[in-house]
Image (cartoon, rainbow over all chains, first blue to last red; front, side):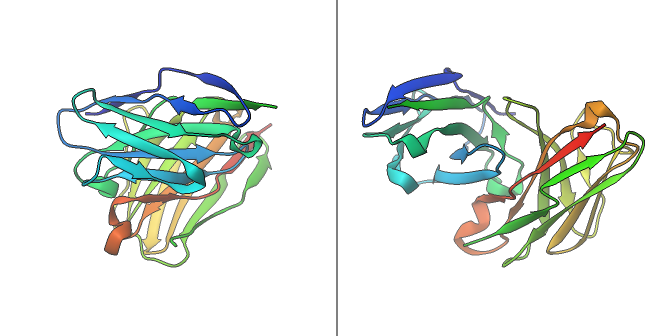
Length: 115
Length: 118
């Protein structure tokens, strides 16, 4: 079984400042890791994913994340945020079956961009 | 890219009635679809895995007789909330996996369906 911990339920950041949203996971098997964004009353949009290869993955909207196996982390970063980045961000993990398994989600982090 | 369509986006019904939510993969085939439930300001909880041509697999604590899932084709799964009650009010989101290619390990999500039971 896997679990995901998003340490911050809410992160306020000023516009154009950098941001890091933290995510830690636990699993007894190798995993795939994902970050999704959810805008109000909408479904989830994939930001980026780590399946294998380079531990630094780049996604859409200027986001990137780094997979750190020793620390079991997959923190999401953006060097300069915009008002439009205000949303709920979910970290998720799946087992080695990849998309064949349902994803396990963290509780989400609400990113609030302040002007 | 892969697109999943969910319908209706919003539905309001009276207590005791049944509501059907459809989830369609528009440009790919999905042998497996997943149904999630999301309470306000909370994470997504996996309800069940919908398998084309066979019975759905429900997560522990999910009533299979209340949440009927049918996956009749490779592009359509339906979730029927039977005899709905106010506590069933929630945001229901489906997702599907493209069987082939680079999308095989990525789930695509529908836009969600907000159910309000009066």
